[in-house]
Image (cartoon, rainbow, N blue to C red; front, side, top):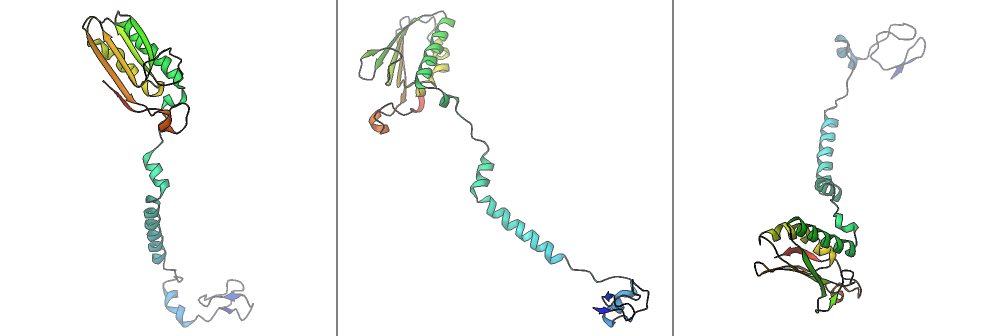
Length: 200
């Protein structure tokens, strides 16, 4: 840089006339070629663009391997509505669904609740219980309409075994799920929620 000899305003060296006082200036030789086309020196932005692209690729690669990206890719976790109810509520829902299914198909049910070692209890027993239903169906295939809507509740209701006896067809159907014992759960109290789906 140099100053205008008349008004001492700082100049860059490529000005032909001082913008402050209008005095004609001596242009430096290095800028004389640029002034022919009336262009000022420009900055080469290509390295900056390439650097930004490289940083973006590296950032995307790192983000893709992070747990945040995996959570975003997986989407929101769906909550199981059964997690919000107690085992007793689930057991009552199980009973209601089966009873509604029987009545809808013109049948009645005789319900027997027993512990896993065979002792008779009621629906409120604070332990895994097995349910036996004695009924009489007009068609054996109706059992699917009656049991299928309810069997997913066996997990939460702590009902490891559900048996339906049909007096008319002399058939018996058994549905079972796996329920850890209090010793396996390590709690010494109520057992954990059972695992697996009910199987006939």
